[in-house]
Length: 302
Figure 1 (cartoon, one colour):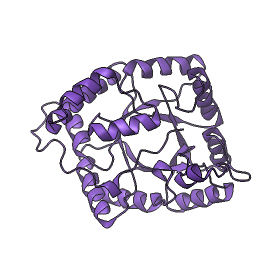
Figure 2 (cartoon, rainbow, N blue to C red):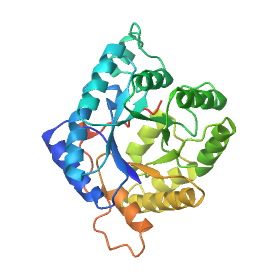
Figure 3 (cartoon, helix red, strand yellow):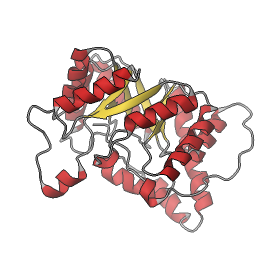
């Protein structure tokens, strides 16, 4: 298993992240990753957060790097910083459309820049020194004209040099198995790790899902809406669904689970505990909600 975090914006957020990292380190993850400009933001503290987590958790940390709106020279600078800091793996993404560009209608591709993640992967591969991970969408990228088109885009990323993929989160396991089948038919044999996010806190996950195109099934929506005045039951239900989802995925060959933690460890801890034999009793199911200035939509796995 592995965990994703995002760079905190405040001192309070940094303290929260450190505590979350210490709690989750108990589960001995294979690695953790750190997002790069989540939600299209330009305030990137990825490297600083990666160094801090490596010191706190004592394990491998994989920085994200995204290319939309950035020049090759800027990407080269980031690569050099990661290289100097001793990070040997990168999760290479197109990234979210910058918020200011989306509002102003400014061009998203700079002169000589990258339009697609496959171009970023090739750029990194040609410079050497990094193992490259990429993202994929079992339900299709929200901007893709068809599922077939999205599968071909993913194949191009692998052909450009990607060695491992991590999916966008989903709630329908059949979508993952079908996606894996389709890319295997096209000769793709790299590991495709499952990205997972529990469906609570419901309002937040609903907002994320609408943005990234993840299908939140009607039966989950109805159950969550039935618990709208009972947040504890919402979380309990989300943990039940996520645990069953993980068990089915691993039983049927998924190579691993990558938890989108949102820097809040409780839900991930409860799922991991349930997957252990004889899990110890846990305390409160969710804890304090994320403060508004600490919430970032997970970086697009384009």
